[in-house]
Length: 390
Image (cartoon, rainbow, N blue to C red; front, side, top):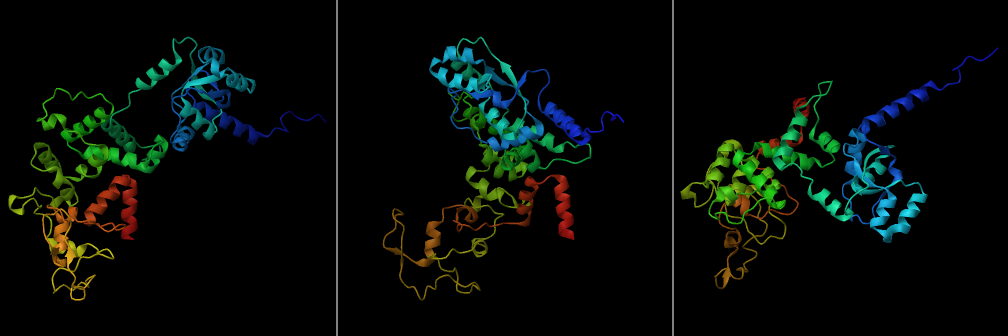
């Protein structure tokens, strides 16, 4: 009896092959020529000697594909510009290489690591200078400023998929090919008032050498105000909006911002004049000192004889005076009781006192909650609440 057609077909394997082909098609922009990554070679004249974050980019290509085509050059055109590399190029051509990458070396390394079967390319054959073209391509790339990135990240975090689920910052960072800290800092910038957001943009423009500061009035602090992203996200973003505005107006000194931002929102306040620079909302020095752990080997003694805490070193057993720091204008020696006051800078004690290495001091539950909120999306926060209430 003749065998019916199709009886020996591996339908499961065929379905898996069609699914893999469909997945690869989704990862490559349609309408552009494509090649296998192993048919491309890196340019020996590539100006970027070290390729960074290949692992992160490979993970991003695996999930979302390559959205930007690599610029490539035929080997014969490349050798015309760089005859010193003729032997190396011909050797690669003999192994099956079709093009030399002109722009996109990091993407090529990530595509090879991700195991992509195809990558999009843009072929250039007639260029006046490959080196100048590479410089132009790098200089003409204009990325988003930190605030624009923050808005895009927040919009992505607010989006819901077909199941109604939102991305966490960790998931978004993985798909974007960056770190979670990068996403967290950018999103935190959205808590800044507009003048401080502009200060972050000013700092970014200065780093990009796009902000002309020459000829400006040096006394105009608002026009020249510039904040780096990390400081803005971890310190200034924790201030209440009214205190951020006070800082812009000059009513809150930059030296006091770090101290005030560590307090819960309902305790934050402008330093009063009678506090001699100390913030009135901060507790007295004695209570602050009792809350901080004392490092081993410290020469400091306990303040006050009626304290219940065990002193690190008993002043009665160590009557030797403690030498005063050089250059402080004092003569002779200083008593152990005065040593902590000499070492502390004027201002808020909680900021100026040096904390022991390896110790993290949490000022309040609210501060801890703010740190957790920066790292979790709303769904994860609700799950954490249910876990804590269980």
